[in-house]
Length: 328
Ligand code: ASP
Image (cartoon, rainbow, N blue to C red; front, side):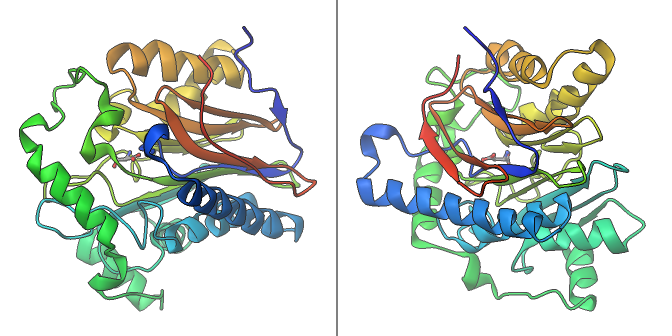
């Protein structure tokens, strides 16, 4: 069986809305249509930026903002709540051309955390700002902020309640697989969002944004704002991941795709397969997925879970979206 998606674009994007999908048997036709619509709108927003001559970074930010603004996904409005019932969000953004990166962690106020990460990338000498310091930086720059209630949805309150009830089954932080795999756990019922893009000059970018896992410990930060774990971009490839953040950090998932390509000369598809299946799934079944693009415009959308909200778009502007069914 071929391990490549055989998708190739000159300029375009690939996005994900997280691997914590609602199981196929419980997904209603209406909700599935709403997810597919939101993914398509996100792809079209990124495509519009790219076809207007915008950079890969701007395309990634435009696509992610749509998903942050949608309550369907676990990022921005609709973020998961931590064990105190508070939304704290993480995001990161990286430009492949010069490997400039920006990230924020544990922020409670920026309406679009990915824009906060972009501010750090473009206007700060630092890469990662956290909590109140990050918020002050964003406020001073005039980034739109929201009150806590804006981010909270009924659905995520329900997810928090379910995760609290099953707290004793909380994922073992030492990394043992739960019998049914991480993707079945309520704390994983998430929809972290991410995007990778290649613009008309051939430059790559990647970004990721999340509310983290439901009922996460106060102060917990996952892989999404960690450059090299949840997000990485170079001249070789761009990667955005979703899944069990602790494991993604330990396996340096996003950087590892770049490193395998760079050091061993394997293709994007081979590097992605090795990391998502041979490493991650071998350690923890159903632990995550990612979207990735390389310098030639090859696109990979890979996951070891039952589903991943995902899509891609090329220069012709036709969005392709899907939720279930992966390649083995
Ligand atoms: N990776 C995210 C985290 O651990 C969760 C997710 O992708 O759904 O915070």
